[in-house]
Length: 270
Ligand code: PAF
Image (tube, rainbow, N blue to C red; front, side):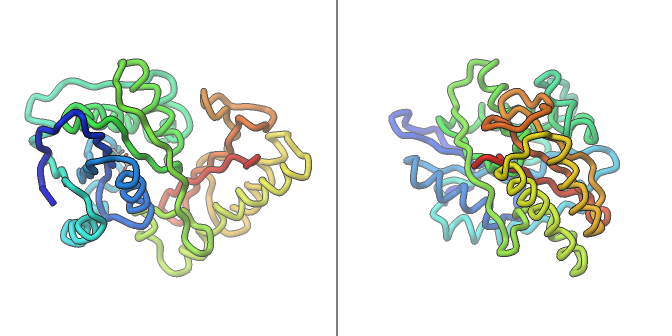
């Protein structure tokens, strides 16, 4: 396994999995998919300061590079790219990209600048790695929609391959931030998946009003002691809020469990 990005033979398909490390089964499922679909699999690990707000958890963001490298070697990754802060944002750095509008709603409303940081770092990583395919998990649904728009608007050839959310046995979506939860909060955190499940049951029984679907989700989250940041039914393509659920809507939630903010989402129809 090489620990840098090498020049590659363009006849081979390069797949890319960008990560911030502290790898879990969700990341590893992307690596597996990348290896199945591409000749070369590149994984980056870079905790991107530009996507953390001033009051967010950059300094405490979980890191375990030794364990990450062991896992990536076990999963047969060809190259691991470990840029430094200086490689990505040398002193005097001034260039930023932003997908307008979509970056300031939903998670972007409570995390100003977050998606500007994500879009900028991903664009830089794509220039450095030059993959034909980039593998992304659907837990970060808004991120994936924004990055697809970025690739389309900037005429990049890389295609995003959306991969399913990987869940713990009790339904909690895997996330590096789950490691912040204590035992009691870990049980409370089940409410995100339960809320989505209950809304899905309601939808499949014939309720399509967003108000009713959001209400049931809100009740489940509040009963468990979670504090919703937002619960929204949106158009899965444009992220616009919708009054009625259909095959192209998605229920998105961000919920505080204690001080940890977790996200999850589901297409209620599937
Ligand atoms: O989803 C993530 O882990 C990050 O936002 C990403 C895409 C690696 C950019 O830093």
